[in-house]
Image (tube, rainbow, N blue to C red; front, side):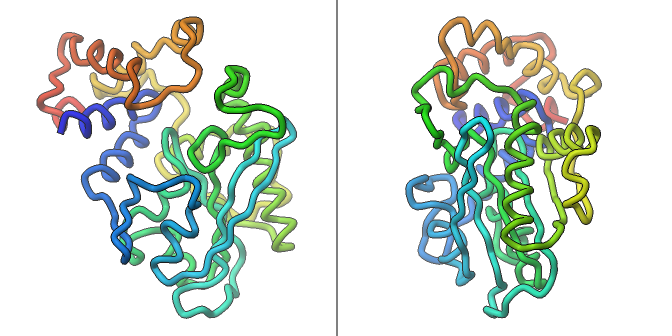
Length: 271
């Protein structure tokens, strides 16, 4: 229970809605028909093999390389459970902070947006941002190299999202619908405000849109955001933030020791 609570609290670091999704993943861990748990996936197997195909859906693994060299994985669901090819436009699904493409597949097929859209006739594409477990490749760098992690969400808007958009557009020959959650809304706001990608866009659905953290009412979320000193951690040699690592454990202790934050009563302090 402590591990579940720690993961939930840490997921609030930048986005309250991302934490809610993480909590749902832990409490309601989806199991595929062959018994595979989403929370224990092997990144080497890929999302298609691990999550989509066991449910009886067709799935294709794709990769796209950004202009700054990051190799991102994309999953395509070209048809629904019936096997009939999609007859509606492509839809790109972009996850939020501390998540990956599995967030759109974690519940049962009739409760997961990716499956629902595929069954409704859409050509579904699932994005995975740089640094996530399915997008850790680079043209010249390794995740063990500190410089591999030398980026912020600005690069997600400037490189990852445009590369993914362009790839889906080129593969399908159609403009696409976009669905972003949390951080996925933030990078879309940034790109669209600069009039980027609009020539390839049909519509944008923004779930739990996020821009600033200073008006969040939750003391737990505010405490987490205030205490996450990214630059200090960087200079201490921590480049990848691992939710179950030593730095995360220390951060959790600091958050829970703040006045007004009682981590034993999670739902109250969370809401």
